[in-house]
Picture (cartoon, helix red, strand yellow):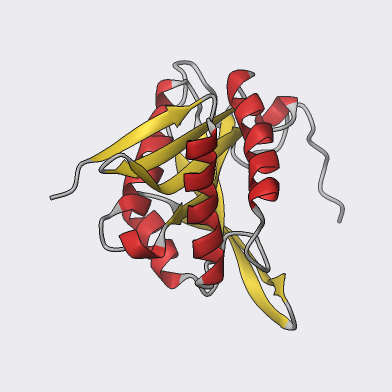
Length: 195
């Protein structure tokens, strides 16, 4: 049985950058739905990683690498909401496992780790987006408690093909005394119905 460990990164040396690039490159080459039309260059992934790790150091993100017997085989991250009213939630992004490591449960392990990390850091809601044809990923997220909260039909463009953009969420817990108003009328930002 291989040894699997989640590493939480704030920096990445050349070896780790190469391993992360290999994961992203090979996932995209195999048709993975992770936001790239074609396999990215190492320089592009290194620049992306620099931006993410700066956000990690600033407290606005977390990046994890799942290592199998010491080699990075899966990655994922969460980013804090970008505006004041969304600072209490995170968006889980870029979940991917190298095609050669499929079947080891790395995707699930990465998402579970990100959810727990966000919960431990006081975030209240985790969200994520997934391509509508990625049924396996949707089932994985549902098995972890995520629920669909929106779907924009044919909003993801891959060449001449279009796919649904599916949004999912998972409540992580609310601080004591939090008032959950939902869609109730009244309060800041409300407006009356127009008849």
